[in-house]
Amino acid sequence: MLDKKFVLENDVSVQQNCDRRGVKVDVPRFVQQETACRGLQQEIEDLARQANVVSKSIGKAADESQREQRKAEGRQLREQKDAKQAELDKLAAEAGAIHRSMPNMTHPKSPIGDEADSVEIHKGITDVRSFQFPVLDHVDLAQQHDLVDFEGGARIAGNGFYFLKNEAVMLELALQQYALHMLIDEGFTPTITPDLARSEVLQGVGYIPRGPETQIYSIENFDLNLVATAEITLGGLYAGQFIEEDDLPIKLCGISHCYRTEAGAAGRASRGLYRVHQFTKVEMFAFTRPDQSDAMHKSICDLECRLFDGLELPYRVLDIATGDLGGPAYRKFDLESWMPGRGKSGEYGEVTSASNCTDFQARRLNIRYKTKGEKGTRYVHTLNGTAIAISRAILAILENYQQADGSILIPKVLQPWVGKDRIGSVES
RNA sequence: GGAGAGGUGGCUGAGUGGUCGAAAGCGCCGGUUUGCUAAAUCGGUGACCGGUUCACGCUGGUCCGCAGGUUCGAAUCCUGUCCUCUCCGCCA
Image 1 (cartoon, rainbow, N blue to C red):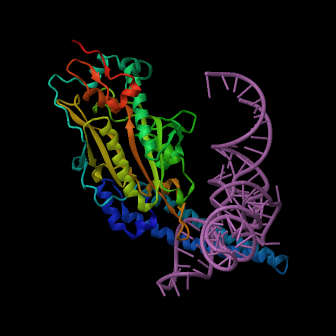
Image 2: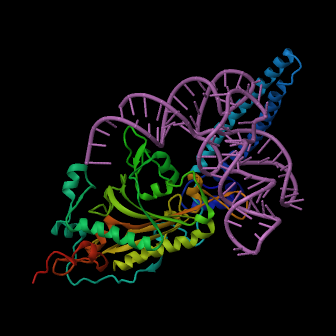
Image 3: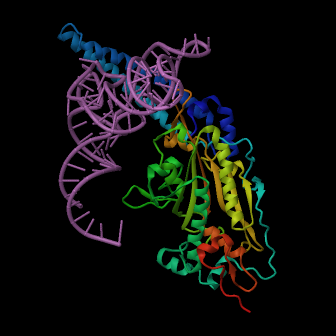
């Protein structure tokens, strides 16, 4: 959520920001309603004050009849107040709906425009390989080496589910180990989070459970939902808390399964492991002071790059354009890995992303820190970034590491955990 | 699944109808003392939304899990609801 006062004082730039992000918001209407609310609030407070004065005077009343008279007076004042309050509630609900639909403000450097306007700001150190043989996509490779059972997954849970098998299982665990070790070295506290969370938590982080277009699976008869990312649980962990300024920044990483309905995504590059209903992800999350968040954003993005540099996978980093940012993000960097089997002759596909949400989530989650110098409290900034989304990482590894002889090499950094250097035997 | 207890300020925890935005302790901030630190001691210290002021500040309202109700008046009484804890049972 944006600060209401900020919106009132910056209505023009807020409107411009909404327009650039492609979100329909009637800022002038909000300003008008919010202003009216404040007027009403004044009237209500005045009535409340008068009623309080009357109540306090009752003890000092001279006799019974005066007492009764003041009781009646107090009753009347509170009735007037209640009527005004009802009026205000109605108006505030409308203003609140507009308020909640406002996306976060945007970093001045974010490119303006839609998906196509995102700007490449970095390339990985590993070059895109040129293959001297017909390239297979990961689905064919997986089938050839018995690594993923899509049919089995579909039979027991439906399309979009799968069994990982054999070396794919080892790859999944190896990727978790690899990511976790690097993150721990960088000062992240490792966690394994719940895979379910209350609706309240999802909403705080910015997800909408149980809507018509929801991406979230909900549990029947319980106020619980399967998380779409550990961002939900890690962000929710500090909801309603006060953090000591000296404890900032707090850096957490969490392993969770991620569940997504992918409603409306049918047919959209949905083959194989790219878009699935369940996968494992190692997520980074940070709480910082406002002045620390830009640097933290960069450092989270750098870590994502290092993880992919280490895997020796080619990738590029995009500074995401305004129209493609999503609600809470102030700025977002996506990391796209080269996927040789995608499209006709290979395409980049999103593998991780890093967002700086400034105080947008913190305001809704009510996460503050106590300032040392000045009096009072301030909202923290929150940031999140994917360390490794396992299913897409496996996809990228299989396709990039395939060999002319049909085998698939294991990235060097993963070999200790996989226990071998190659999937499939070398035919000679 | 059965039985109990409880949700109060940054934390612990008093408080059963007006004198309570709330004791006390901890923590935090400032002063004094000590060679530094620690200790001691004195003082200050809740949040949110407004009004007013160049500013220090002054001032109104709201807030004791949440939502309703009773009352002139609710942290306190009533109803509902959510959550947490303890014990027993079951279970990986």
